[in-house]
Image (cartoon, rainbow, N blue to C red; front, side):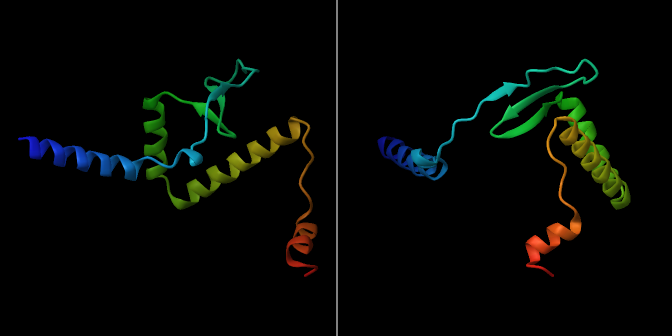
Length: 113
């Protein structure tokens, strides 16, 4: 019985060591609520690890996932374009500069091509 306990502890230590990253790679993360709630927006917006996220009830998340899985490629493309447009409008409304023209970006990225 003692042998089994020792093997179990050894296996547990081996398993734990594979799951635990070195302390130097751990990052602290906290969810911070967005300071300006929009009464028209039904969800809380938080900032988590440098990203902005929306707190959605699990049942609604599952519904969104089911809709996404059943949507056609064309519907997903249209939804992605609509989301990108909304994100761009929010970017501009927040006073951020608009993007650069495509031709200029192409020249910068491709070295004058």
